[in-house]
Image (cartoon, rainbow, N blue to C red; front, side, top):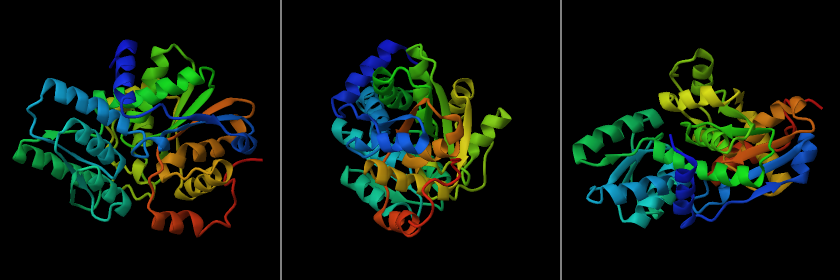
Length: 329
């Protein structure tokens, strides 16, 4: 999909707007997992999530190669849309973003604040995405998919930063939404010639990639009813699935309860607030704690954008729950 020189150039494009994010080794997480734990803090970008990197690379190429484009249009549950709105504003391109009805209020506000024309449509992401495709044709706009080579190239820059700081990771857990993040990690690892095992993470309520990984072909699901909206995918991308099947060892499924446990653990152990997808990697590591003893473990904290009300209902209200659910002692 790209070579190391292209990845370095993408990192320079991203770096003009997004400083390298931290990769911290947290001792309390190490105690919790019985392993060295390094967290890549993509919650520290200007949009609070990793996807901003992909938007910047996509818009840079669009503006350079097709400067007369009337505008872009896409669908999202939040972070992809914030990325495109942020990047489009920097490059002077109008952005229309479709979201499902009932989408995160705070993510919607952020997209509008970054300059997007926000349209609410349909009961879930897939329906919003299909309508955005129809509007793209109708209005002559550039339809930006959730998975695209430029988006993967952009988000791979966080993996480049992580692997150059921690080349000796034994295993890296990465949440999967539409697949750009884990694909970027796989491709960056391979370009750097590293042996790190990469494990994908999905919600049990939105397991389309896990099912597809097992079946060897795209498997669609009828619902994606998880509170971790960054992983609420019903229809996997075939190109992403191909990369993941070739480069990931497995996909772990985690429940919303396990994600809430991980969100509380991140707060108590690192004082970082995460969104559901951002805590999924830790949830998977807690589930697989027995196999991680003594290893160097990487966790991608992909974002921190969660509505206060949802955080309160999902994470705080059940704060008396055990802090190590499904994690063997």
